[in-house]
Image 1 (tube, rainbow, N blue to C red):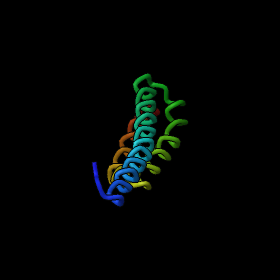
Image 2: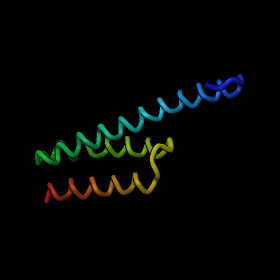
Image 3: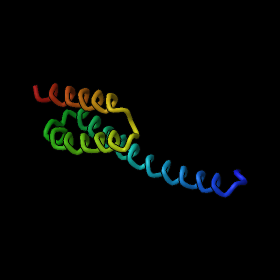
Image 4: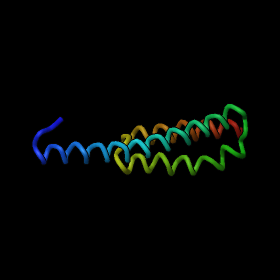
Length: 88
């Protein structure tokens, strides 16, 4: 543990930021898993309805810097492709 007051404060701030970031990432992963579960069950209507919500969660994680922009775009692209394959 740090001895200097400023270093102690830094540790506290980093811990708060870490827990805040975990919430965004966890929420994003949860929505992705739900959508993939719908896709696995061939539930096209539910999957189409859940897709924009999942996109919002991914975009929020990108916006907060939890994941890289390219990773977010890649995930959205793959999920869209899977949902479109259900409809076809």
